[in-house]
Amino acid sequence: MKNLHTIMAAGLTSLLAFTACSDWLDVNPKSQVKGDVLFENESGFRDALIGTYTLLGGTDLYGGNETMGLMDILAQSYSEVGTTLEEAPKYNYDNSTVETRINAIWSGNYNAIANCNYMLDVIDEKQDIFSTGVYEAVKGEALALRAYLHFDLLRAFAPSYKAGADREAIPYVDHVSKTPIAQSTVSELVDILIADVEEARELIKPFDPIGPAYDSYSETGYEDEDFIQDDGFWLYRKSRMNYYGMTALLARMYLYKEDMINALACAKEVIDCGKFALITEDQVKGQLTMAEYMDRNEYISSVYVYDMDEGRSDRYFKEDAGDAECYIGDARRSDLFGTPGVDIDWRNQEGFVLKEGESKQYVGKYMSTNRIPLLKLSEMYLIAAEASGDKSYVQTLRDHRGYMNYPLDDDCDLAEEIKNEYRKEFLAEGQLFYFYKRMNYEDIPYSSVKMTESVYVLPMPDDELEFGDIKR
Image (cartoon, rainbow, N blue to C red):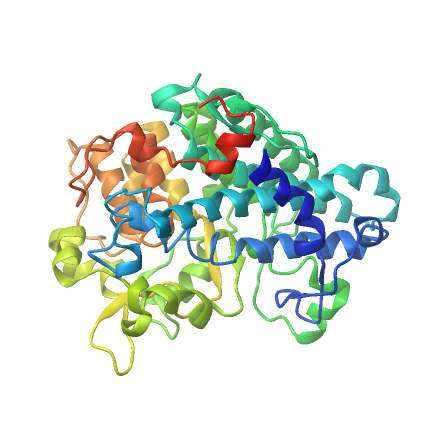
């Protein structure tokens, strides 16, 4: 598997060599460090873990292609797309730019998986070097991150569970190896990933400050010395794969598997835990932006990016973004939010920003925060609604988006209401294409192309097909 294993062999020296500083969120690469040196002590494992999160925030992965960039372009989220990317909404996967970005998702995710495996391959034999709870946290987060990355590769590069649970999917790579690894089937892989996350969640449960072992959790009021202590390892848990992030990921996975009982149980555990809350009208009218309030209250797990504006948001959401510009015009917004949503939906009223000196309003959720959401509370409400058939979960979400005086009809089409909320809630977050694919929609809004399997299943890199153990 030339493409994959070249990456895996290079992963440790090129991407795990990070060191923590007084603010662990600002991680800078060090000179290359060999694995046996990096993992001599606890701080090496911690640095390696934080370095992997930093990798996820890169523009090839969740700082671009897998959120606000390619994946949302494929979901037809934007009414106008710059010339570099204009072949993507046509699903022209042979276009060189589109192909390059698809390949970057494949290689980047497997690269991050390799980093997780470097830690997991040696961590059990090093348990005695860790202080209380850190072994469990590092191992648990590495397991959960590896599962998250595999799951997104599965959703992108394999048939959906609904379309072909027994079909060949992607390789499950759970160790460092230069030998090609055969594909798992869709159902096999989902079960493996669920088991990984369940293990991770049990490992971290007694120690996670945001988990059920603690009555309350806050990310406000930290001082500089809080970052310095323990390199800030236990701070800012919402910027990591914490216990409830793992639980939310399980809810997403169980729903994908169409296991509604477990999907509902996991979603409700997050909803009911009291560590997260849907934003209120007072907050929307408060001192901070809506994006900042959502970041602080609704993000369950996220990736911190220190240069969000210049390094991420401005690449797509700015008039001089050039040939990568992504824009949602007034007509599209009116159609998306509808009546009365155009006038009352907070996501329409507060979710778009007009920058000084510009004439267009762009998606604003990345303009005033430093975190990219991986899992959000709103998704748990939508999962609970779909898994239970109870429209009150959708109504609760709508109430916290401005629709307090507009209850859903008793005979409403719940599936349609859930779809509408996905379209509005996850703009520029990379989730909508996967939703359409999971539901096996043949027609999606604004696409003139029939959504067949050849559209929904992204092509694997040519090197992977030529040199890997791939059956299709």
